[in-house]
Image 1 (cartoon, one colour):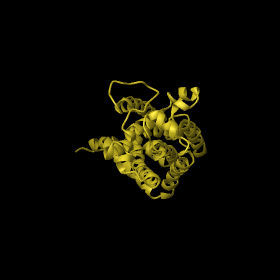
Image 2 (cartoon, helix red, strand yellow):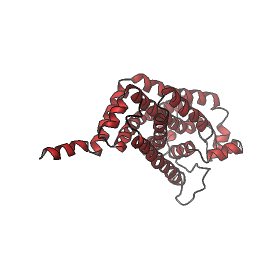
Image 3 (tube, rainbow, N blue to C red):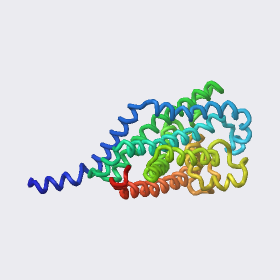
Image 4 (cartoon, rainbow, N blue to C red):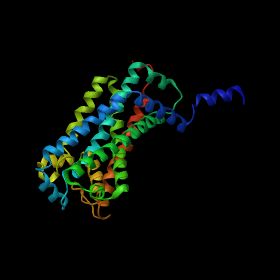
Length: 297
């Protein structure tokens, strides 16, 4: 092989898959070396799960049963929302991690390397996916423990669709997280400041959670909340996870009857979330491509 050919090969980088693997490994190692972040980010959803089930569990039973058409514990109703919240928080910290890279100069090194920009984003996103799998699995187990202590229910009464349904709920958390991961990374690239990124993503996080179907049936909420919820991605994530949890159609913002049962919720919800993933993922890659080492402070 000639020297020119070797130089050209080096300039093209390691290939897309190899670049993705390098970035995935780097971010996984960075996360495991700072377990405090994983612990604290999981603590918030756990507090929500425990407090909400204890405070609202006794007073929401009638509204929930009327909404889903059967007797359902508030624990079972709430766990899908907490799974989505866990994914949302993991996606939020993705942008904060990128800002840290910008501030310590690591991002500048990535920009001047021959790595594929899409691989940089994909590798980072996959590291968040691994974290979401672990954390949402913990939430599912904790939810069953709370339900068992409250009612003595069997696992089959907890997740109506069984083990595959539980795996599907984790999958919904992953699909949901991609668009907000992209958004938080775009915020990081635009602001290049930790405080601004944290404020920006948190400014959206809690309003989006409460203006959705996460904690209460939409039918009992004000009309303007129902209108906003129809445009809120969290509604689609929560409804998809809840459909798998209960094994039935639970969506109220889109009327679909073509697929039958819980698929009338899953198909449109996952279609909406996948479209958001593609659009915002493309925006994040565009911002990565537009970034230059001279612009990074």
